[in-house]
Image (tube, rainbow, N blue to C red):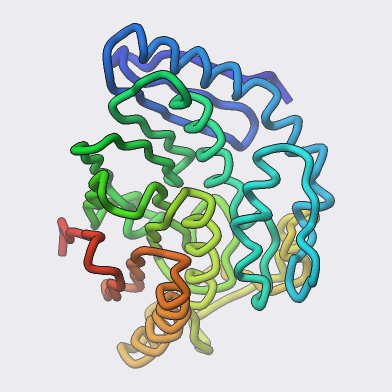
Length: 289
């Protein structure tokens, strides 16, 4: 595996960082000197990050389901992953469900700590960590279907909202899914929490149907943390009743997380239909039909 790549994008404002499966775009807002200091801190935090995670993969691929004691991780990113999935230990989940969001959170903390930025974000393949100061707003588009990469929602987060993380999961994304959702976007207190919740809600959007084809995760990737659990590889056209049933199952999962205070909002999409759930302080704006 080659080493990390860190470069400025052609617009001159954003930084692109890549190493193995990690693919990040980050942007800082503020005066030039502070932004440059933030980018130097970001680059320093990025170097060695992947190697640290690889060293802890045996622990991070192990389910926390039913455990009475929280697993003890060494690296800061691994600790964020464990913290994000721990509230969901009543379900099948491993810390890997939060890996992309946890990486984004860790790098955002590095680039924003003590630098006096106005705003900042770290986008790790669609799982986004945000930093806002009073009176500021960040907007981002959320993909409604991974296969077409077409955005269908504009997410607007204000400094007063209890949200600093956005994540999207579903069929066709970077990870396997147990469900059939085209996409599930979640807003939460940080990106790791949003990532874990989006993964689980996307897995809950499901229904038994002959048009759905699954294979054991291990048959597709021998190292998958999902083991022999059947993951979705194809979803054909579904009747409206089947789409409704699948979305209702996912909405029940998301609703329980809302009630528990684990997320701020969720948007579930499947074959042209949507379910939007959220608290009044959070806005999800539909931009396309």
